Image (cartoon, rainbow, N blue to C red; front, side, top):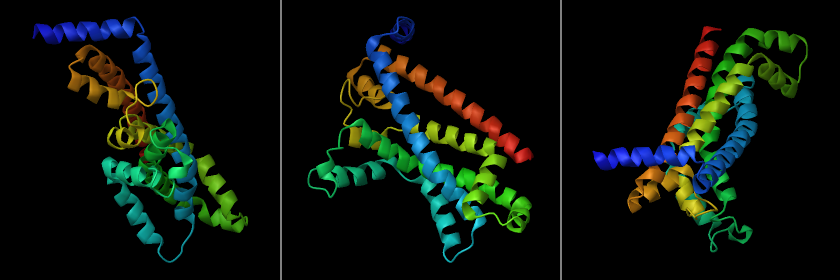
Amino acid sequence: MNDFARSIGAAFALIGEADSELLGIVTLSVRVSLTASIVALVIGAPFGALLAITRFRGRQVIIVLTNALLGLPPVVVGLALYLLLSRSGPLGAAGLLFTPAAMVIAQTLLATPIVVALVHRPASLLWAEYGDLARIDGLSTLRSIGLLFALGRTSLLTAFLAAFGRAIAEVGAIIIVGGNIRGFTRTMTTAIALETSKGDLPLALGLGLILLALSVAVSTVAFLLVGRVGEK
């Protein structure tokens, strides 16, 4: 118990002193996850809205598949990307393996289905209400998507926060494609796993406290926004 208390005290000391290694890990984690979340929003939001306003053969299959991908195992994504980005893989010449870019790709693949699912449902409800007016006004598909985005700004923010929460807490995929290289690809989650295995509990706990605070904050905001969307 004394060892645990000392580790907690040392963790808070690292946070209070703004330890350089800790700050570097947190900064990289936020930068990678923020980039992945933005890319996921740019890709997933238009696709989710498109599924809401169009009808075509196979649409329902795509919707079901997208929702199924919400439970996509991160380690499987990491393994698939590793095979693609390794020197013997089809994308090996790009030299992306064990770089922050590879980590962004992995997190984007995991976050995009979340964005699609969270945008599609409210967009479908909005389209059921305003779709006839859009057709009467002769709005194109692109302008119709813009209309849904304008009406459903809250759902876009909710989708972004949910994507960021998934990305910032991810460890399985990024440790495979990032390599957990100190000062280069080491994030909060991968560092926690490594430092715990090494017995360096103060740094692991410090990172864990910061990650927990970020995750709780993002989850709380996302929950409140989802509640507001549901009331509309």
